[in-house]
Image (cartoon, rainbow, N blue to C red; front, side, top):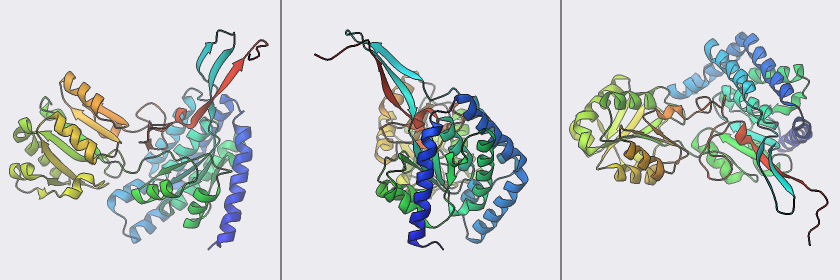
Length: 423
């Protein structure tokens, strides 16, 4: 196990290399960065069997540690998921170049011509858990946006991430880009995370955490550089009185059960009282039939006998499992009030055929993503046409919602004059 001193030396070396490469990467052309992404995608496809063997080691270790089925699903890689990972890299390569875009331009009365131009953030530290595909997604988005990146994956996915990382370095080298543009912390020692957060402000410009509540809280508490991320994904589906019954059932079922372990999974279902007697039993039956435990308030329990009674804690719990809480509300105002009190600002969906109700929901619910008649599981950069995402940001500064390549840029002002001096 590395000593505290060796961790410091290791991380300082990684930081210096990242800072050096970031300067070079920011000036590379879009074609070269795209070539690196395409070469990395090809390398991942070619190494599919190797990646699966590495993932099998992680899965065996995770099962022996008693990880939940939802967590094992997040960790698992098969041929289909590996190919989807490579396809994601190709999709990112096909996006517009986020670097060097003229975001706005204007001319002053004194003749100065001013442009706001997008530039990379610099060096991004990304700390994540469980899902090894984040290794590819995060690195690709950083390369696309001209940023160097330091990856620190979870111990659960260490072998899988290392196998993917080798493919990324191969792709960078093939395109003539210094492979240190993407670096991975080569230890599972938690001290490396602490050092990155507290002692690398000279090397790292921003940190993006992606994982569970404990990880993200630690990053937000300890980081000495800006953080882009979210603490929890307590997402809601609100079934309005003007909802189509079949649509409501299908959306709730998908929002909760498509993948229960992702941050966009619905954790609470709200149903208008006017339609509760007609809709609640149908939704509960569908959820229970799919293996989901339903925890309901007094009204839900009176409508369906075998529903577990919800407690106050359920309304603010991110289950990340096949469990959902359900509450009957008097109207849309009460639904919005519930979301304001218990939500985490991540993603909320209203199911309704009423344009007025949808517009009220969009206006009054201040979450990063709000949807009408669609599953909360669309809270994903790939589904937004971003190719992939590093995570969902719920803050109000810089990035908000899916963090893709565009969100990994800042800007500078370019001012052109013709001899002006200030009086």
